Image (cartoon, rainbow, N blue to C red; front, side, top):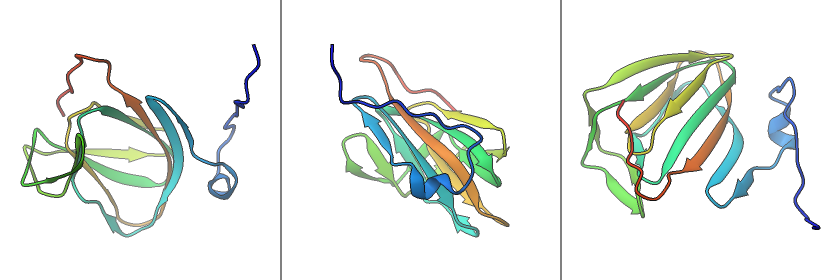
Length: 134
């Protein structure tokens, strides 16, 4: 079997990788490295078809999750943006933390004092799988 796909390793990741490492995308899975500049106040969003996983390499962020997103706009199938979150929970994430946001859970990211450098991993839900709660 021959393949054109390449494996890559992220070892001792630093902010310099943002310029060097392209996003990786396969059907049902993607990973990209992002820098969130401070200060930053994220817009609420929810993904019905994908789980989000954040792996924080540097910085501190407030990830807000909620039990409901009201008034958002469905920008594409299962992708909701904007609106008001209710029943919110604050999660302080920092270097070395992993944050798992199940499909369907409304969330937003706020950064106050210094940039955040993280990997954002998206995994498509299995057929018939429901999203989680915050």
